[in-house]
Every structure is written in structure tokens, then in C-alpha cells.
Image (tube, rainbow, N blue to C red; front, side, top):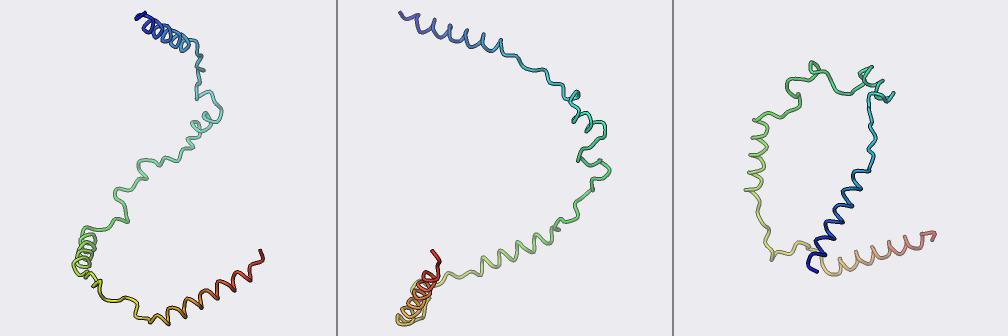
Length: 117
């Protein structure tokens, strides 16, 4: 009874491998296709000739430019001061905030009334 799993795995493997043998793969020769033949004959590729490739790119930043920008970023980072958390950022009174909120709510209601749906 212990041999049954092994024999069944061998049988399944044999069936699988025999199925792979019967698959017919078409022999495609791309040179026989007329579109490919025209491209090859007319050399209609987008690959530039080696003589057209520039030696060095024209739009590369110099080392001095990179160093200058890096120095500016370091100075900006070093000059950053974290604001004090105890200082109130918004200096408006509660009445001003409530008035602005009422104005914004009125604008929303006017927009909703103007909506054709």
C-alpha cells in the first residue's frame, strides 16, 4: 500500500511528459514575413548610426553646480528652526473664526441651491 502514492506520481509524471511531446510548435521564420522583409530591406529602424551619437551629453550639470546646490541645501537644513509648540499659530479670536465658518456655510448652501440636480 505504501508503493501506491509513488506509482501514481510516476504515472502522472509520465502522462504529463507524454503530453508535452505531442505539442506541435509552429516553425516561424520572420524573414519570410513581408512586413519584416520590407523593414530589413529598407533598413527602416529607429536606431541611430554610431557616427550620429554625441560623445558627451550637452545638458549635464557641472560638478561645481552640484556642489553649490548641495551647499545651499545643507545651509538651509542647518538654518531650520523648529517653531515653539506653545505659541498659538492662529491669532484670530473665536468670534472671527465663527464668523468665517458661518460665511463658508452660507457659500456652501448657495452652491447647493444653485445645483440643478
